Length: 78
Image 1 (tube, rainbow, N blue to C red):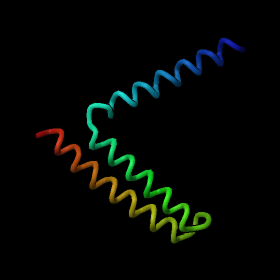
Image 2: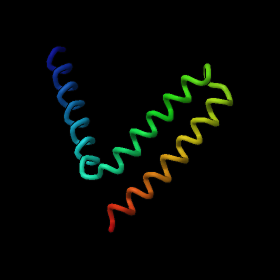
Image 3: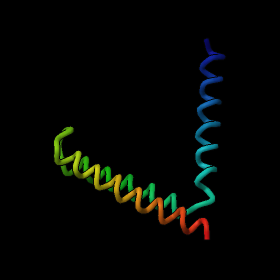
């Protein structure tokens, strides 16, 4: 049982590190993700529960993130 837990922890750590390395080469994408996190956090603070207000706010965050990501990917291709 302990071995399974250890193996799961190692696998999870490896996956997290691999994910970090994928974005490490593009600081613009990291900035987009950070802005999205702040936007989503702001939505959660401004509204209570999963109401329409939070859904609209979250949709705006996603739209903004997608635009930012597209711009960051274009910068990476230059």
